Length: 447
Image (cartoon, rainbow, N blue to C red):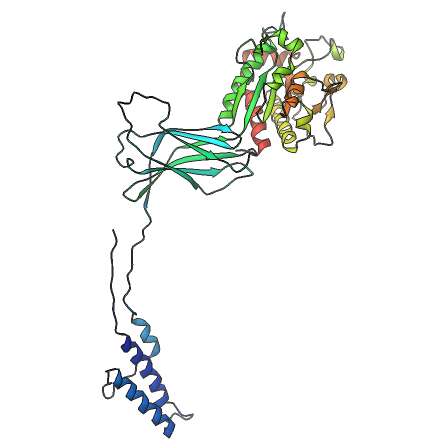
């Protein structure tokens, strides 16, 4: 509601007051020794003209009236004015919606979804205001910005239509470069009240293809002290856990398989891996990264030890990149951060003798060799391995053919007994998934 104040004053009164002050200065100019100067004929003439002008304006000063000092005129207000109260809406914090979520649609689109609070009369007829704040290094902002509005409506209970979310809004991004955002839904009512939402959702325009290596029966360890370990089964556990951890950072992902078996383009398990393995990498088309989850092995009887009883000193993290990733500074940063995070996790869990990982740049990616792979007491690092047709590993070659940066993460050696034990009896899958997610988010500059 507006309140109006009106204040008036006569314009000629101001003119007189200013003129009177000026006349007083002319008539009463002080002398050097404290007396008054005698007025000249010119002064008398000016004073007479001043009196005539005042009389024409309809005002004659009374005898002996004190002149008004110039600064006193500031106390008077001028012509009629109107003053209004602040029209900004009243701001309050409250639960404005429920079940808010945000999901990547494409590299330049993110969909925000939410449900209204049932029977909320304050919202009906108002607007839902979609607020966004950048949270990755390339778009980070401390302030929320309004990116759009959606009219609030009363849900039609008789329509028979049901959906997970009543409202949706698509945020169109300026660039396909990897970016992470936080979203919030505010409410603007018809009563000029702004409700600030208390719930947030994080999302990004990044999509990752997770490839749990092999399939059931691959790299099966049978015998004493093997703990029933199978690489093809354990990598699915890591992959599913990684999908969940990435979602916490607003990163969408999907798996080449979520069960013990894998089928792509009609090829299953061994038929796929032995003759058409590049299809696994090609499955990543349209994504930002192809990440193949593995555990490592060594040559038979390496280091003079039984093949499956290698010393802890062999355990190191290797991240093998395809040529596409090797030419990208950002993807090399991701590879370095993954290797660093997994190495730190292994050291903390007692699976590695040292917390040391050698970072790589475009000019220093180490070629993979059997000798380096089987060496004891050396740092893990980022590697590349080339063959006659480009990338040696078919999954990485397939990703490169799809135009996607790809990498194989050899988290640790399943030929080390303690690795197998923790994999099958403790929570190693989640620990490695957490490390992978940490490396990816840090490498992308995400929260």
